[in-house]
Image (cartoon, rainbow, N blue to C red; front, side, top):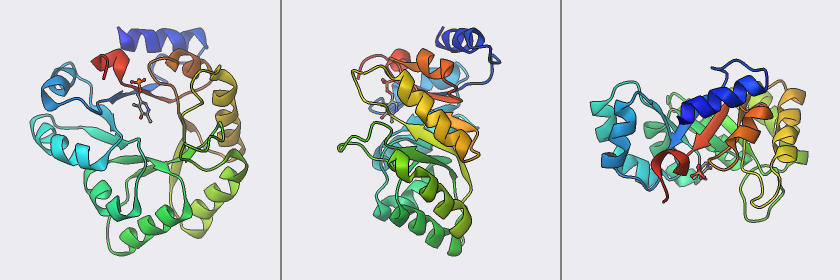
Length: 211
Ligand SMILES: *Cc1c(COP(=O)(O)O)cnc(C)c1O
């Protein structure tokens, strides 16, 4: 049903039904609640804490091959090694210190995960992410100086505001910098995000119920 709503939103926006990837956000839910979603065929999941993912995903990965795990919460540099061991995608690259920590791991022989840069699209002091005005320079630093492959941008717009202008702004920044992927839209606003060009939606409560 959720998949059908995503596809309908894509078609309403004249986009292909399969243009949008669903990331099932399983934070706070245990293996017993996640297993049925895996059994239904979902393989792409999001977690916001490294420690929590380490505790529950190795066992689930053993039972269900082909899992792709996205880190969607802030990453401290002292947890980078653990994050690399457990996540396939990091969506929250948001500062030079973290970018340099990733480079050090690569130099030590680690294979880096796929990377999205988080943009603090509403310029909110309590939120992580590079400021919109600093995004181009940060993208350049990552790509040109540090040779990090950047796949796209991620944002969480301000709560209690129309998210559409923020989603469109993230799309503008991505286009201006030659990035094709946009991770935006959660349970309450994913249809708007899809209309604004989201390629990845991160949906928790609409799939798993209330946390
Ligand atoms: C929790 C979370 C989500 C999912 O939120 P829902 O409203 O439950 O769909 C999406 N993105 C991030 C970064 C989150 O932390």
